[in-house]
Image (cartoon, rainbow, N blue to C red; front, top):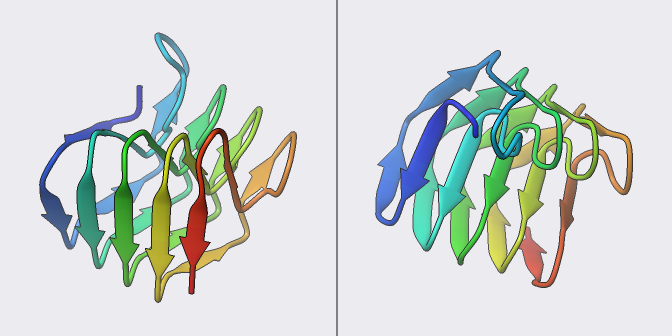
Length: 116
């Protein structure tokens, strides 16, 4: 699990840099969130996951607003963001992320991802 586990609620103005998920679930190198939540004005940079979601791994319906998610790496899917359910990225910068499979910036399974 990543360094910042988030359960329900809202998190604002958080900076998550250079964390690693290498044991246990090995998902969500920077942020591992479950259930529903909103995350505002966050910086998620330079994180790593052995599995999915180098920067962010989320279950539930999650909303990211005005966040920068960059330079993250995942050994499987979603170097920047992996939504396991529905997710939304609004006014976010997601770039320079890398993963072994799929799109290096974002990916998902069994749900939908909306971005604008």
